[in-house]
Length: 308
Image 1 (cartoon, rainbow, N blue to C red):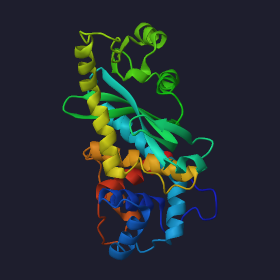
Image 2 (cartoon, one colour; image 1 turned 60 degrees about the vertical axis):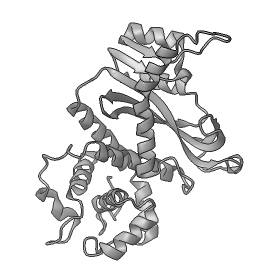
Image 3 (cartoon, helix red, strand yellow; image 1 turned 60 degrees about the horizontal axis):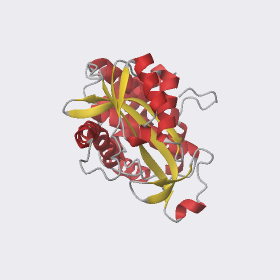
Image 4 (spheres, rainbow, N blue to C red; image 1 turned 90 degrees about the horizontal axis):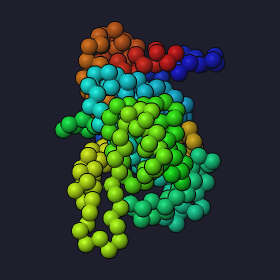
């Protein structure tokens, strides 16, 4: 990120900071404290200018915008290299700063964060929602096209409509969703303006002995299964749903965008395979040393150059 102060060239660079964090998450170190302690204990030769833990966390929060740029650029490159299947899916997942009884007293992240009931977990929580519109791929995890953060109480349908109005992400295909996205007016608009058929499960009529619509509902649920697996995979890899340690809005943005950037690297590990690593290695490491994961360092340096 561009710096306008006299400390625009810190001894421990932003590229090194991003490298340390992404590499630590890749080693299944779930907290910033664990990443910092491991780097200090085992990687001091690679990163001799590692700052204090307080400065490490503070600068990571400041780099939330850089991680957002990483996630956006990775997503664009993944879509460029993947053929359009014209099959899309939309859904949301909760990111909880507090839940159950603690959700009533929670004040972190306001006014963006608020209280809402999660019908899947059957519990109240204080936090935000991550809305994802993704492209389905046969036999693989879907590729996110658009990701949006909203208040926890915002209706999924309104969030999806806002995504469509803001950036018109899809056209000419089928959009699979759950019953929360049922809206006849929006469905007609998508068909007329975008040539997109939105398919949602039908509610079974009361006292219907034939259980009409079961085949359609089963088919739609099967097509929606990859987005459920995608959300579960994100949570396993980065623990994105558990944000109880967050104490500021910047920290929340970093928590979300850093997870999305890391997931993009995991989905497409060969995305930057054609980049010359030698050109960037000298930026983050002392002469003669080897970066633990050169691919992450290359990505961090290249994207930060584009952001500047």
